[in-house]
Image (cartoon, rainbow, N blue to C red):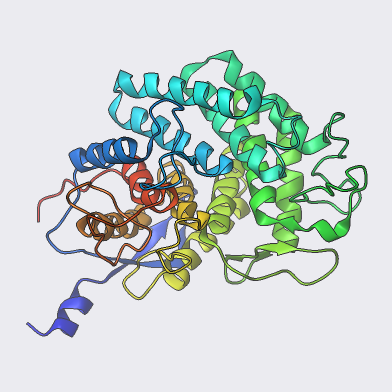
Length: 399
């Protein structure tokens, strides 16, 4: 059969049905079939086990930077994403061993990161590093109801929002012009300079952190803060025509429209959480628009998610971005009744898993390229297929 005809025949377009019961004409999406190969639930377990076997440091119980350097850990903020993966693996399997691993991972973080002392300005030196952990601490509480996680989620959120009397910074939130700063002036921490920049990677995660705490506590102040920051970000960092998310904005300048799919991801997650809490449809519209842009414009012609760098730089933390996308795309799918994105996620998983190193069961961020058995792989690059597999259910339909 002609390959062009075959490809065309595999592309099926469908309308999305929003949670409000209305068809959205902007959500035409391709349903991509990856052929007969389909990952299974066992594959998801195997992928998680391989990630743990080759990259989890067994004494420190945190993830190594790569499969070659067995002394150096991955970046502090990415460890929170790996903790999310462990939690999602437990949710998928209900395997109690994963709960044990979750607790060991927390203890590893305690030892490595000054007992989660948010006032240590050397360990916690950027606002968004803290906020990723705020989110994960909240999720850990939701899963276990262990109050220590909730207390740390609350204290870390306050530290980011309002600053630290120890460090002397005034906090990430700008009460004058709105939005969240990415960093503080380490030379002069008491001043809040507009030149520091307000990045998407702190603004949208702050909304998610606030909404996670709101869902737990029902404290309206968190919802108020979430709306405040989301509205600022929507005005200053979001393209409401296309659904693209800017990297940052400095002062009164134009946004930096460098695109990263983790910013797309947290915008989706923030919008979904606000939609669920308020039932205001404009939040859902933003989430769908952002997801469509990520899938249809940022992904390649076959729908494979983007990656940054050449795929061989083990210091490049950007490999973790699609793991973050996994966390929030599934919430749009499951919480907002948007199943049209499942085939896209599954196509990415099938492609990446098919190209894994079959000796180690490890993958990289370049899903289209076969991973070799002697390749040095970073925790950043190896995590995304694992993360996608834990949240995206395998397709069990018959061919």
